Length: 253
Image (cartoon, rainbow, N blue to C red; front, side, top):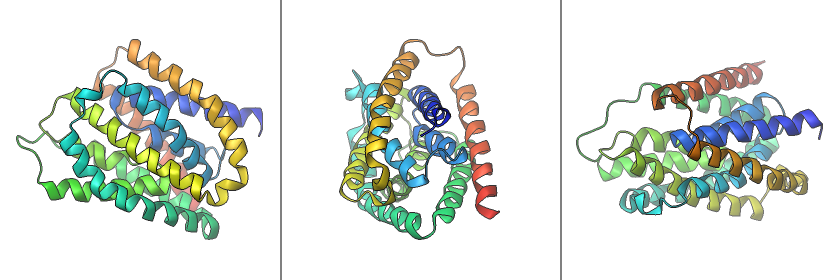
């Protein structure tokens, strides 16, 4: 791997860790979007690396805040998310082996749809959404998590509409991400697909990336920028929109 590729990976991890810690979402989408856009890694390899390092980001972000997780809502989301996650994972393996360009195009479309859904997000409800809403949302999240190690958008759209505190929303997100990431990592180890051809290299990159993730997660916790949550989200959306546009164009050419 060339030096510029390694630098691009570490910068993507740093940016994603920082934004996710502050906003509660975007780690998987930013890492996957940037690495696929820059052609640093194949989508399947980027997803494996993303799944590994998101575990550290979410665990770090939750440190000392475990009690803020809404266990009832987390269980509702995980019930269907964990059922559909293996389906998404093995679908990504099949697409990666037979139709790699289609997988990149699909990633670009998913990122674009996620940005639109997050941008038009409505105001919080006065009461909790019905239980079946959480189950459907969890299923969509599981499919995205299996396909791209980026299960955040459906969860963010759902939880930010609930009558909950911002701390509870973010901690519940981190908790669900952590469980989903552990399951996907287990699937990646048991059946790595094409990513298995570079598994040793990915693990070495991941070992180095852990320090980047830890450093920038802690930096965001201790020294948040003088920006509102709204402006931070706009930065994340701008990055994702550029990445999605590039992936869609590349997939169609």
